[in-house]
Image 1 (cartoon, one colour):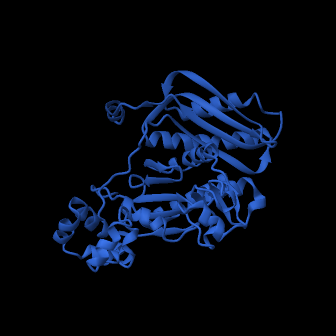
Image 2 (image 1 turned 135 degrees about the vertical axis):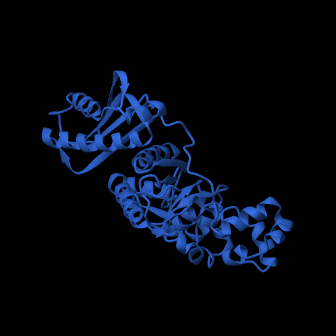
Image 3 (image 1 turned 180 degrees about the horizontal axis):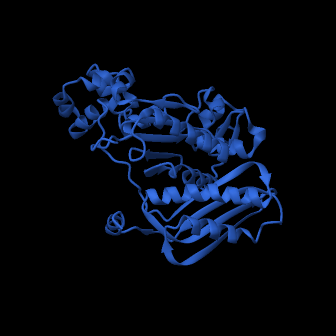
Length: 362
């Protein structure tokens, strides 16, 4: 039985060199090459900047935000690609749909980053580590991309941890190891401490997180005002912010890309049973009922279709998802082999907590 005081366990997921990794995934001939996504270098005279670059490019000293002209001088033989934001947003949406299903609370913070609060369903770090590895495996299997995850008691530590062992990293910081993890790090690892703040802290003799954490907070307030308190708290691993959905949840969905294309009815039915189980579990965690069931079908030649059916009334019935999905699938069964199937529910309604309470006694 869990303690009455809920212990927070937070995951921060950060895709590895997201834009360039998507490009390499979709263009295998770029594998192993330095890849730069950003403005046109125009032979070294371009005026834009690097949006992101592959880890091979970083070995030449390239990094995000660098002038594209300098990047070209450092690595003229790299593959320079224009930003394809439509593609990255689409891939991001697919990845976020995959990982949100594992969270009690989910917060996407950028196209390639998200926080997951798992403290309602998991209360020990061994299980949290297993879950993080499962998420990494699913992202790799379903989307062909790697991510790095930090597991920690709160958002700031989880974010720092996710960057600790990139790429394809997993760093777990238990509550009793927070100081051991944070204190040796350079102050630049604390969010908000940038190029303007660092020189002032250095003048105060503060260069690592431990020195910041043990500094007299009144001295920090004198120099930085309220931000001095914030820095001091973050350096001590204190962050009371909760993981919160930034947008209203409009759908819950998941999909599976098979190792081998499938076509026989039994394999199709099993796939929809597994997908339905995941969708229903995520929907119930978020306390929704649904009215519309959708399916996604991708044939071996990459032809992709979606179909949907709206029910007469909103429900939480898992069997209704499965039955409706299989009915929608009848249009496609027998017409080829499938590399991907997906299931989702939309037209969501929040379950009335009073009704839920009463149902426990009926």
